[in-house]
Amino acid sequence: MRNLFINYNVNITDEQFEKFEKYYELLVFYNEKFNITNITEKREVFVKHFIDSILGVDKICGKTLIDVGSGGGFPAIPIKIMKDDLTVTMLEATGKKCNFLNAVIKELNLKNICVINGRAEDLAKDVKYRENFDVCTARAVARLNTLCEYCMPFVKVGGTFVSYKANAQEELKEAESAIKILGGKIKDVYNYNLEDANRTLISIEKVYKTDKKYPRGNGKERKSPL
Ligand code: SAM
Image (cartoon, rainbow, N blue to C red; front, side, top):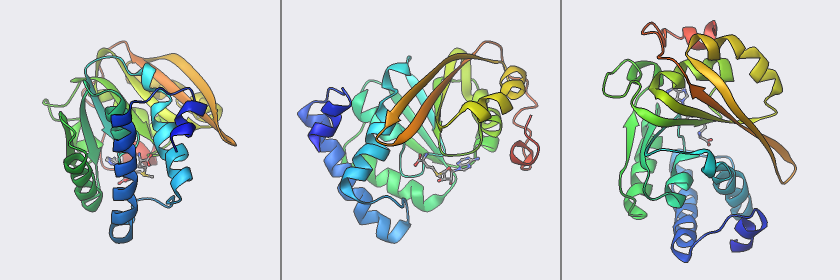
């Protein structure tokens, strides 16, 4: 498995590699009870979950990160394994996935990382979290226009929202007005190949504060995206 990281030009220490091995074991063990992921074959997990999560690690600048819709911990936990000095908050709506994430934190002995069981639409209204993070990440949670309304409120002015996407061109076009309304500006679009899949990391800089009326709540982010 270690060669996979080398193939993708990712430098990894023995300690980091051991954490990924342990994370894989926990994922497979808990998956039977908690139904966390459809991908369980070892090589596939390492490429499609672990390496996919960390290929954008140099787009992550700052000290604090919130990951919206973490599910089984992607991309937050692989990023934390690679960047130990980062303070990470994982936000996840499903309780049993939060139980799994807490077990991973404990077993991997990760510090300065926590899990919140809740929805982005609610937490983004809380002054403790609103515009309080250098970076927000999200992978496979919603289309970009909806996702911007969930994520941009968490980002400080000057910070970045990093969205992990497949074939992002159409979603980028569709999200143009949402990005602007929420105080963002496209900073970088980074395309890469992961085996046979096209992947894109979209970095959106927060240039203005987000108006307090966003996120609108009551499912409007999904039903009628900005
Ligand atoms: N990010 C992980 C990944 O890439 O494997 C999980 C992706 S999974 C398809 C989407 C996750 O987002 C689910 O676990 C779901 O519970 C969570 N989710 C969806 N909408 C959310 C919201 N508004 N607030 C918090 N979590 C949300």
